[in-house]
Length: 382
Image 1 (spheres, rainbow, N blue to C red):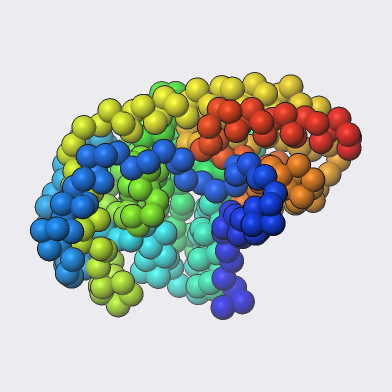
Image 2 (image 1 turned 90 degrees about the horizontal axis):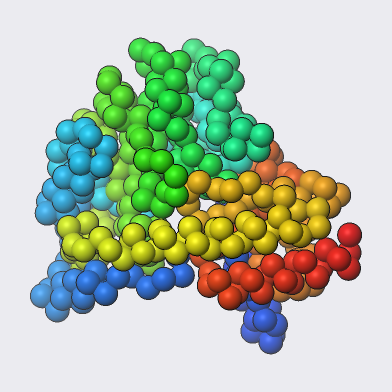
């Protein structure tokens, strides 16, 4: 258990909520979830499912109707042929990370993962006694990974490579040419890829491109996606993995041993989310892009802050190196002194030092207030 890490966003949220109970006014830019409500048609489908008695167990891999809907959507969006027996529905995105590691990684194996990156990657690698090999994401490359550097990290012990685009926490993306170059570097080696595409519908530039779409890579790729970000369904707890059928059967067995199944009525809501009107997710994407533009412009006006323009997701990852403050100390000060809850870049790995992550999943009004408070703090303290 001592090997297991955490997700700092939830710890900061708990601390910020405690401050609010003491009467403090806190602007929440720490937690990574859309602030919009779940689309009404999806909520109605969930309520209807409850009233119709969808309150019992489902198959461990998910309801056949939902797996069919997901298979059709992924087939269309990734230009690959996906069948329902290649889909496993799970309660949230994290179980796919968890199950991938449990199924594929043994003690002494090496796993290459992005750093800064979603903290659960490194946590699970360490938990299983494997070697966590970080591929740095650097600001000067717009937080795109360096394919040549990736090539130098691959060894005979490499079992799994984790890709994430659009990326948490930086908002960087892996371009189509990057994906093709990564595939060429891996070649025909016996290496699996976990492609975390949970933010694929929250892209502001270009088109998403999955390594599963590259010839010869569909059977070596596990796609992680879900409903939390695209449809603002974080509390519904529903994600899914897409993988070859023999691996999907093992993931379903892991579901049987852990969760039994994903809540049945949420799966019924998921069918409506996938097959129903897609205008709300698109409105949400456009709103996040508008907020990104406002917040990044504001950050770049603040003394000793500088921020690249993220190309996807709903995070900004400004450099705070010029402040002279360690990231964690600065994040704590902004929360304690002016009530702005953000995260230290080090919450996402060692290469996050010198940066902070602010979620833009808040209103323009609150984002502007946060900018004003940070600006006032820097003028007073720097």
